[in-house]
Image (cartoon, rainbow, N blue to C red; front, side, top):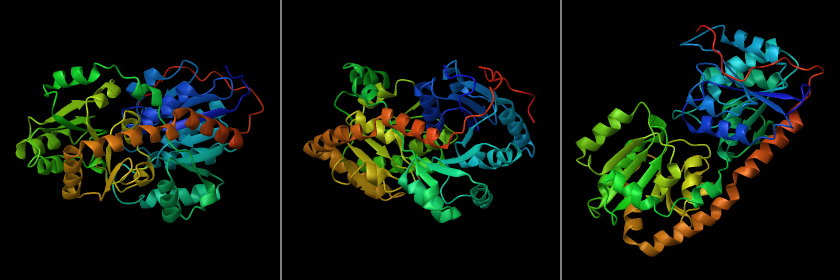
Length: 392
C-alpha cells in the first residue's frame, strides 16, 4: 500500500449509484496501483450500492445530504483537511460548487473539475459556468472524458483549452470478447425470443438524455418491413414507466424487453444482433465501446465523441439525434444486408482495441503524478467504510 506521506487523491461524487460515471470511477479505483497514491471517495449524498465494490484500501465517506444544503461544502472541507488531501477531483458538474468552495476553505491542494457529459440536453447551468470561472481563477484544472466535452467546456466557460485535459474512457476489452459461447442461446430463451429473431439492443440509464423513446419509435418503423425485430433495453431509471407505456401504446409491448440493471451485460450483448445509442447528448459512451468489443454493428447519434469512435459506414451508421425515421432506415439496412452487418461488426471489434482500459488507467495515474504535491506529514486514518453522519 501507499505510505502515509504519499499523495492522497480524493474523488467527489454525488453517490456511487448506477450510471456510467460511477461505474467508471469504481473500475479505476479497483485498477489503480495502491503503492503509488492513496485514493479516497466522498459522496455528497448516500454512499450507493457500488460502494461495496471499492477496494479495501480506498477510503470512503458519505456526507448523507438530502435535498438542497448550503453547508455541505463546509463538511467536505473538514473531510479534506482531516485526510490532508493533495488532489480533489470533482467527478461531475453537480459537485463542482461544493468541491470548489471546500478547496478554497482548505488551501494547499489541487482542484480538478471533471466533466463526463450532461445528464440533460442543453448546456451547463448558469451557476455551474460561474463556478467554473471562479475555479479557473483559483488555479483549478479541468478534465473531460471526450474531445467534444473539452470543446464544450471551453465554449461555455471560457476556460482555455490548455487547462482542459482529456482523460478518455476505456473498457476491459477481453471481458466483452470472452463471453460464454452458449450465452446467446440462454439470453434469448430467457426473453422468449426466437433464435432467428433480429434483436436490437441498448444499455444505459432510462433518463431523458438517453432518448430511448426515439429508439422504440424507430423499431416500430423498422418492424413494418421486418416483423421479427425485437428491442432489448438494459438499464433502469425514472423513465421506465413512460417507456413501457410507449411500447404498449405502439403495440410492441411483446417485442420490447426491459431487463433493469444487470451484472451480466457481456452475455446480454451476445444476445443482440445490433447496438443502438439514441442519446441526445454524450461524452464518450462506454456502452458503445463495450458493444463494439462484443463485435456488434453500431448505430449511434451524431453527438459527443460518437462520430470519432464509430466512423460512419465503417463500424456502423451515424444518424441525427431525435430522428426516429433515420434510425429506422439504418436499422432496416442492417436487418436486410447481412454482409454489411458482418462488415461493420468486424471493424467495430478491431477498433475497440484502441480503447483498452489499461491505457485509461495509465493516463489517469500520469495525470495525478503531474498535479499531485505530496503533503509534508502523514494523514490520519481515513476509514474504509462509508460512514454517513446525520443528513443535513
